[in-house]
Every structure is written in C-alpha cells, then in structure tokens.
Image 1 (tube, rainbow, N blue to C red):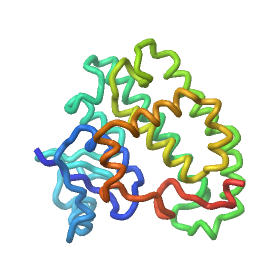
Image 2 (image 1 turned 90 degrees about the vertical axis):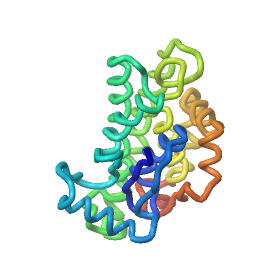
Image 3 (image 1 turned 60 degrees about the vertical axis):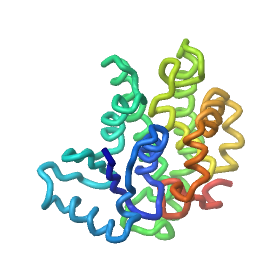
Image 4 (image 1 turned 90 degrees about the horizontal axis):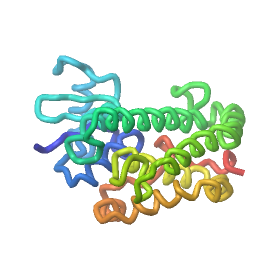
Length: 238
C-alpha cells in the first residue's frame, strides 16, 4: 500500500510527526500537497464532499479506503502496523498517552507566538507572545521535559527508549520536539538540556538511525521556518 499524507506544503508542523514514522518504517507514501495539484486535492477532502468521515484539519492519512485524521490518531493506526508500537493493548495505550502529552506540548509551543489568535500575525501580538513565552520557558518546558525524563528513567529495559527495549513512535516524536525547541529557543535549550540527559541521548539515538539520518539529509525533510509550529524569534529567547 502507498499511503497518502495530506499536510500543508512548506512547513513541518504536525505533519512531521507522521513523516518521521513513515520514514522510519520505510513505508511507501506521497506527501500529497507537495505534488502538482496536491493542495487542491487536500482541500477537497477537507471540504468533506468526497468522504464519509471528513477530517477537521490536516494532517490526515489515506490508507486505501480509510482516511485517518489527527496526528496522534494517525500514529495510533500506523504504530502496530509498522512495528512502532508495543504488541499489547496496555502498551499501545501507553504509547498513545505519551503521544497525546506531546500533542499538548505542541499546542503550548504554538501559543508562544500566537497567544491571542491564530488569525492575527505574530507582530500583532508581540507583547503577549513575550509574556507567554517567558512563562513557557520558565515553567512549562521544564514540566514537560521533566515528565519525559522521568518516563525514560523508569523504563527498566535497555536502549534509552520511552517504552520497552525497542523504538516506538513516541521516541520519534520526542526527537522532533527537541529538534524544534532547539531551533526556536537555542539559548533557553542550552541552559535546560543539562537537566535532561536521557532526553538528549534519545534525540541523538533517533538522529543516528539509518533511515532517519537519510531522511534528515534529504530534500524530503522541510527546514524549520517562520511558518511552522516551531518559530525562531530572537526576542522570545533572550
């Protein structure tokens, strides 16, 4: 099967968490909106005229006749099918729980540069963004990273993974979180990272995996930019 991934062209965004899983799985897929005419096809599905269960927003994944929306839901579907999730029901639910916690963190990252409204430009809410980001870096990032550091510490299996002794999709997603935070807040992360050695080690381990390393070095990996979730504004990272 060749999957069809629908997400906005030109940004990593929430679609990147799905891309990383597909790349690690060596799954055949097309990034539809990056193809000629692809964005129109994406919008037709989004309008809901062609599908029984229309998605609310990208990303969504088409697998045969099945259309799956929401990042965590897509990964819940892909994980067991590509050996990126535990075999047991309890393990799959634990992976999903971790992914939903990452989704909460991503929402807070977005709100650092758009704390008032997504419909407004960053420049229209700069003072509020500075206040929001200050609290985010002071209290929220340590809370989230502290949680994942604890999860890694409590995993008795060897290998430095979040779950058991094998890579799972939450590992890939936590890698992306670290990469994004380093891009958006390099000064803050240089101060914070010594407190979370297990997370830093996981990031390095994922980056060194053959398929992920090949993906990161390819033109399939969209560069971080000021149109995605992770955005670098120097005034937010003093």
